[in-house]
Image (tube, rainbow, N blue to C red; front, side, top):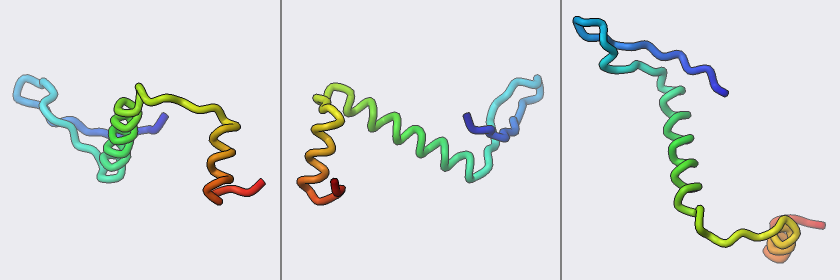
Length: 65
């Protein structure tokens, strides 16, 4: 798990109202969110086995062997 260094902005009652992240942490969170979105969108797609995947990649010339 990544170690995110966040800072909070609080209101006059001490309640957290916002968070400050480094640009690097923010970009990593956006990438993670995108990855999770892709996974959710593809959840119901049919799956294939590892050997079938290798066969297809070989047929497309993307791997050798």
